[in-house]
Length: 561
Image 1 (tube, rainbow, N blue to C red):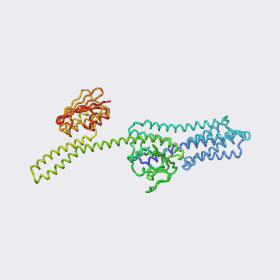
Image 2: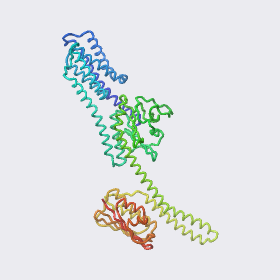
Image 3: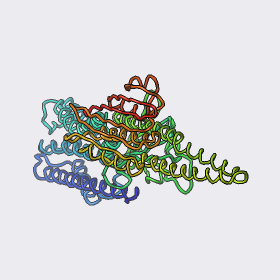
Image 4: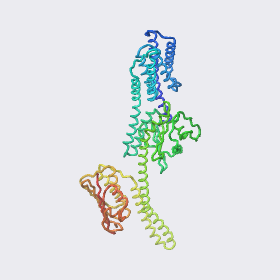
């Protein structure tokens, strides 16, 4: 499994290689422009170069050659804005004021400046460059009578702004495209499963990490009721892009995420050494997280719902400089991640509620079944202990009855454990799966069963099929636990998009007598609750007929759509 540090190192090496490649191409273009200016001024100028112009061209050529050979030096990456400013000053001087050479060189200089701004910086720098060149051009036109005529013969200052604006649009359109993709991912995740929503989270985080050029993108959110923390990250913990379940973390380093300092931009984060536990000033970021993800810089944004923080976005280790406007950019996509986090929280809340209901059902079944047998067993042993001295014959008789009770208790425990196992179902044949349940019931209980089914095979969608088999198993389990039957007649019959299940036994029946529908059973609070709940969820109905002492009949109708 790849470590976080390894992922960060690999990412930084890749991004550094890309940046150096771009810087190399720009350095070569700059050197070409410098040499072109020098050649044009020396050999093609009608008046010849002045001393000042020659000095400026010489400095520019030397400066360009120096950057050509040392463009990959790490220290120069911290001065990219200064280099852009120097390029602007050199090319404005040479292209607009001092030289009398060709318009083509001035136009090439302008294009070079814009490309440099896009490649190493962003849209804001493009607009600033276009505006600066336009203002210089306009000032030159205003004093044309008192200064040398401008080389760049453009009839409208709007032209430069239009060109710069178009180039800026090309660089920013990608940004808006990423924003749209992230919001679309959140919109399409409504109604999806928890696994699919987490996969969508990771896809959105992937777009975010690539857009911001960060080594890691982290989404942390928490549930206020159950007090647990969930972390979704890109790249995943395994170092691959394969979607993985969200990692639940309850460690203390995430508990600080509930603070109010969730929105921040940190260009340089000091390393957290040793056992340091005090978070850095200005934002909530635990030192353990700084060590874990090898964080050197970070951008954080809180996720809020109804005025309360429900999570946070965290982008760490950006290759390019970290600037305040990046936080505004991150906040524009934060609502999409808020929706994704809330979707997962809702799904987990539903799952937790279902888990609690199942726990309650198991506790009730255990109390009504095995626990009662154990209590009876305990009372019988206490009685035998008293009879041993007074009436050994009666004690021996009680002991035989106790052994019979123990055998029944073992059978009941096996039935209880069997009912806890998940139902294995081939949805292509509910009939075959039901037959397996009946066979297992006969082996465990010793009760004979006559199985009947129509000629047409019965199939059902996965969830409906599982619920049908759960109902069948619970009906058989109730017969084994309470009915003392010796024979059961079981039948399946498929009608028009409806499955009819009949279970008849010759046991002692329910304590009540008569015929009852599902609505009547619920109103009177009679019959097995688990079967009633599943039937209600499936939109089915039941006709229960009980004859105390003479068995019971259960007729279920379940829609198959």
